[in-house]
Amino acid sequence: MPVMHTVQMLGVIGAASYLAARVARASRRGAFHRYAILAQPRAGLPAMPRGYRVVELEPAALAAHEVDADAATRALRFAAGLTCLGVFDPRGALTGLIWLGTGTYREDEVAVRFHLPSGACWDTGLWINPRHRLGRSFAALWAGVAEWMDQRGLTCSLSRIADYNLPALTAHRRMGGTVVAHHSFLRIGSWQWSRTTRPRLVRVDATAPIPDLDLTGLRSIAA
Image 1 (cartoon, rainbow, N blue to C red):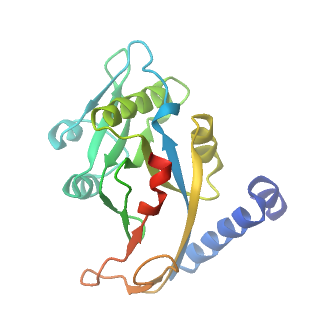
Image 2: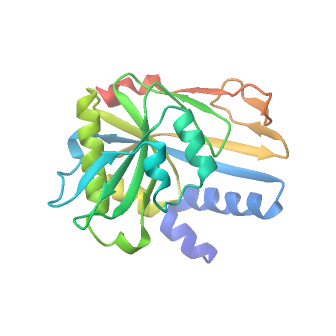
């Protein structure tokens, strides 16, 4: 998108983040991510639309459907202990997914392990089939998340969203979601740096330690 239009849409910081990400990606030697950590209160989530249902999907059940995540990604998420929730429309078609977890979450886009508040879960990998994005699947999926949270006594879901992803941020704000922090990650070659992780600088390979990012200070958000 044109530079001036980008600034008008995203603001100066969001536009700078968007452009930095594009430049880093174009270099093919690095990456830049500036995440908004978004807190989604349980209280703002919708009720289940009539005719829809949300169920937990085990690996074999999920493998029977065409979804956005490939087999390797699905395997990694299940191995990390994430729960996959699937939404089915009134005709019985799987129309979307979301993955949820508690305690810690190992991010798959950058090298970091998020430590979560006790009253919160982590949501990631939300996907709605493009043919159903104008329907009720999004609301139904979040209604299912609300039920899952209620069963575990959780009051808030946390996630990371690119700070220039206006559609996702807007959708959460409509449900009462708020941005509670920002965290940036810079990768150059095989090295990653982030001011907010411990350690800050790591070599990104299979043998390197995964840096930690403690979000438990956000406990008041989940209260």
